Length: 150
Picture 1 (cartoon, helix red, strand yellow):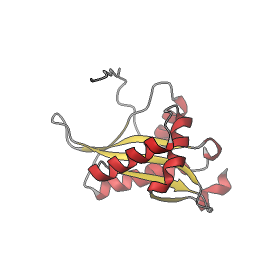
Picture 2 (cartoon, rainbow, N blue to C red):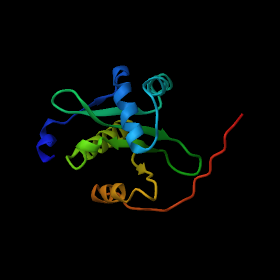
Picture 3 (cartoon, rainbow, N blue to C red):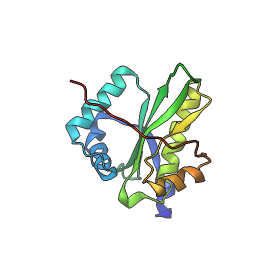
Picture 4 (cartoon, rainbow, N blue to C red):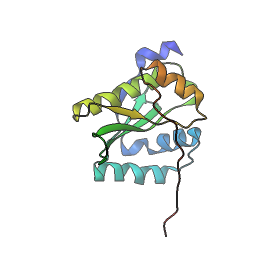
């Protein structure tokens, strides 16, 4: 896959990327269809909730996507956070993830954030090795609780 590296382009996601976003999200273990991802992308844009980037090859095929969001918490300084990053099965190990991560970090800098956070499921050991290689430091492990609201 190293030959792919020079051909990677990063750009903001467009509405016509929804099918590829859905397929990649499903590969990551978060099943979604094209219409769902299209609605979510529209909400991200309409609400101004960060940015979604895609990585494409020389033929314009979407290889991966990432979503960066601003986080404003009362108890700590504002930071940007990686809300999602997925690289397609056939493109892993070719620099796609690093290029997407770099784009989100640049977005954060351009929007005045001095700190960037990544959360990763404890079972995603390959992803953990990737983030460590990219200069991130594990700060804590936590438990996530969800509740469906009526």
